[in-house]
Amino acid sequence: MINDQTSNFSNDNTKLQDLTNDEFNSNVNSYTEYFINKKDEEKKIDKDLDEDKDKEKNKNIQIYEINKNINNNINSNLKLSKNVRWFIFIILLLISIMVNMDHGTIPAATLEIKESLKAGDDILGVFGSLVFFGNIIGKYLSIIS
Image (cartoon, rainbow, N blue to C red; front, side):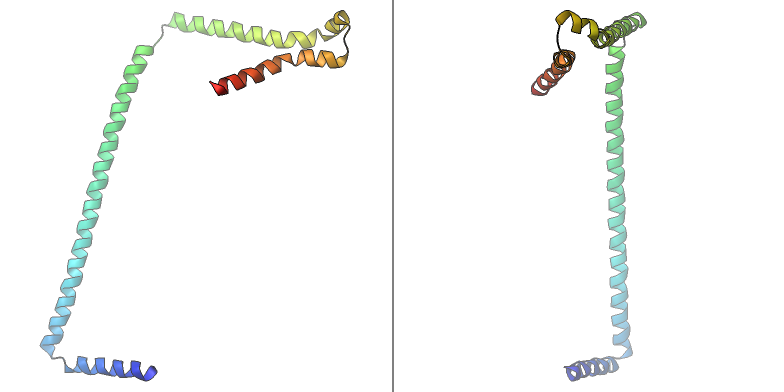
């Protein structure tokens, strides 16, 4: 096997020695032209890729501008007056206060409720947690619909 490789090398070497200067220069020139052409092709491909990236970037900018204009039109149509915003704020504030009072009333009045119902701690615990069972049912209904 090694002898075969050596003989191949020596055959190649003799072929190189047999080449005349003109043939050698011709081969060098053809390889040089090949690599120059290859380099030019790579530059052209890079240029095409850059152009494609620029086109894509411009397209994305146009889409962004269109979306921005649509959002501005929607927002300008949905602006509420200052009085309406204050009214909504007051209503939400009152609802939040009432919910807070509702959740705080039962725990604050547990002793009075326990005495009036003549119930044990276990029944009082179930009574206090009914609110949370309502939350669970509401959560499942919102998932279903």
